[in-house]
Image 1 (cartoon, helix red, strand yellow):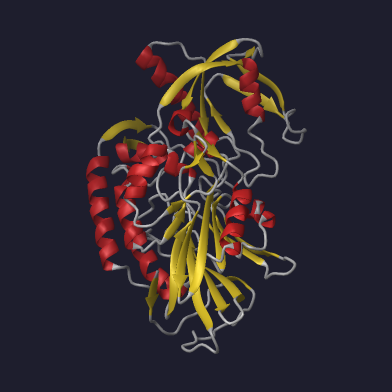
Image 2 (image 1 turned 30 degrees about the vertical axis):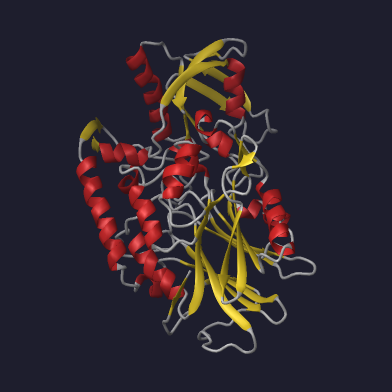
Length: 480
């Protein structure tokens, strides 16, 4: 928790608030016993430490840790604040961090002054013991998981209370239940993930009824827009994550202020800040105002990078450059991820892509060569592909940037019906991503009707021209 004194504050363009005062300066004296403070948040940082050089920075431009630090200070001028994240700080990281097992990111999050974080699914990538050991021990702040148990016992703390000028602010952290499907089973043996909304409500009730907290903030590693209406009146502010989208809104409630919620995209591209006025005489929140900041705003772009953070990033970049320069292959042409019209590559995981298919081919071919087993089919999930593959020389850095998770490639036996079921499961109605397209190796083709009912979209599927037999066994290679 920190306090900085700066003047001339401007409000951000994107605001969700109970009371909006455009262009007003920060008050330097309180009327009565009212405390002004803020809760600041990023999500899904994934070790994106480096600044993106661009002539025309936009809302989607990478902030970089060295600019993020002064921005945190700028939006909190002359007030106390608590710095938070909504999970996925590490894992699936940019090459500059992944090549060093995310140690640079752990260091830099400490330099940024993070006070509390929710656990994300990627914090489990190397196993729950790695989380509670290396990651927790390397973090100068608690990592919360109110809905996570190991063999029936809490794996992480459910909440953390931080006091600001006599106001007790409780934070409850949770992670998506889909973590069990996003991490290798061997990494989370004995770990259970319960309903994050129910877990948050229960802990918020406990904190409020016991008097431990005057204000409750939920840090949820899940797409908040899908769940915001499920929180009870003891949850005052909600910051989400996981789905890599930017959003904000409010939920009207009887007998309480609206629930104000926001989600800050990915990679530290968006810093969000909730300004709170709390009246200690009435023991009530008077107002909440959430602002979202990005590099499209001139005042953000004008900030000078923090020297200490910049030096740590530069050291990590130098080490990564040396390690990543090895050429490991060549490409006759570039391959790309799926995208929406007018958006960047990788913006749509719901369409087939040349790179997904290439990796599915590589999964099959690499195992056949290494272990001498005939593999019928290679598969790749779209979410495991994080960058495009360039034409020409391909370096170790290129490869690790495309797949930064450190996963293994494995093979197993699936029935034809298993494969058909997996194809049907690409469609997820009501989810933040309604389709997640699989990459399939060469020789596999299928026909589908996207307008059909759930579970009935796949019309036919063939392997090397022959229909998939639901009762037959097939050897399949994929990432763990």
